[in-house]
Length: 149
Image 1: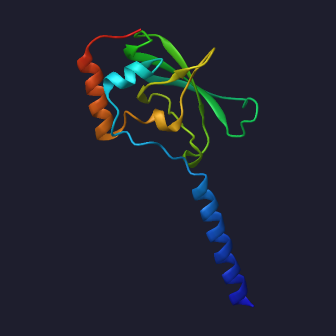
Image 2 (image 1 turned 30 degrees about the horizontal axis):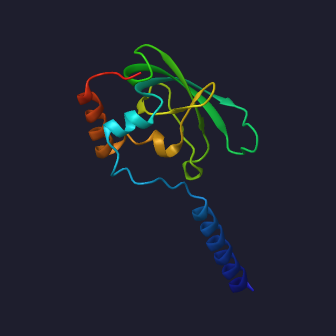
Image 3 (image 1 turned 180 degrees about the horizontal axis):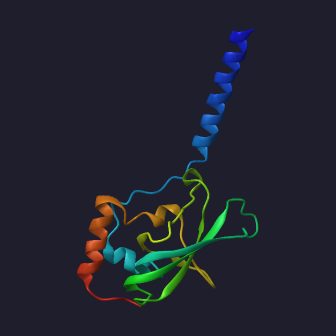
C-alpha cells in the first residue's frame, strides 16, 4: 500500500515538472544583437534607477500579475532624456512565467517598446544588458556617443 502511494507521488511530481517546463519562459539567443540593431529596433533605450513599483490590474485575458515600475533616466541613448521619469509596464509574476521584478534603487539599462500610453517590457528584453554580452552591448551604445530620439 505504501509503495503504491509512493509510486503515485513520483508520477504526479513528474507530471507537474513536465507541465511547468512546458510553460517555462524561453528567450531567443542574444548572440546576434548589436548596439546599432537595438537602437534601430527599440522605441527607447536608457539606463535608469528604479524609483517605485506599483501593482496594477491585468487587462483583458491576462492572468499573470502586472506591475508598473517608474525609472529615473540616468543615461539616455534613444527616446528619453536624462532626469526624465519613465513608467514601464511588465508582468511581475514568477520568472518561469516571464515575470520581471525590479528593486527600488536598482540601476538597469532597458530597451522597452511603447504602446499607446505606456512603455512595456518582457523578461527576454529586460535582461539583454546583463552579463558579459550585455556589458559589450552597453559599451557599443556608449561608443556610438550620441543619443537618438
